[in-house]
Image 1 (tube, rainbow, N blue to C red):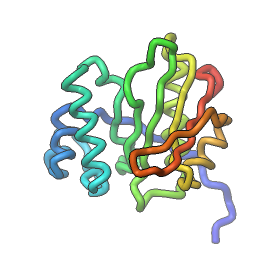
Image 2 (cartoon, rainbow, N blue to C red):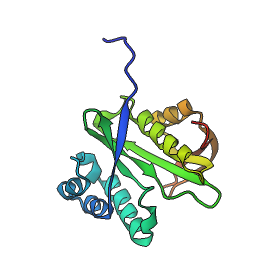
Image 3 (cartoon, rainbow, N blue to C red):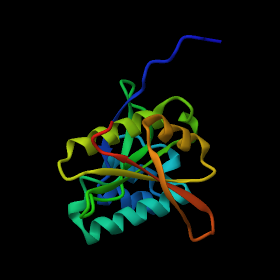
Image 4 (tube, rainbow, N blue to C red):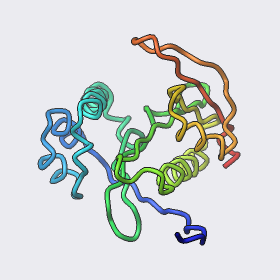
Length: 178
């Protein structure tokens, strides 16, 4: 077993335009990958992912100006492996709150990629003059994401129940505190 600490992971984000999102929502991994210009993981066409990507495609149809904010493929650097998706739920609201979301594909979990994605999202939020607060909503049983957020200093600001009656915790962090 290697006892040396691993180097921090680095990621870059690749846009998933409306056509890529729609293809993924329809289960078309090859079409979504071609449109994105990277080989997306099969996780991108799982049931939950298809629903999310369909929602985001609809969001872009309603508001094309949300494109710079919403989900993107997360690519590990320097090897170029797609390790998940991450982005914001949309542009900041009128009070300067923006919500992050991220998913690491199952085969890449527990390798520091969630932390790398959150780090990159926080840097982007801090660079935007209108963003004051970064929010994240995490299922109460998602221990890995709860630990990831705690490592950045997110503070629990509340909780909510989803349509299945499951509890999710709402966390916030000042955007200038990354």
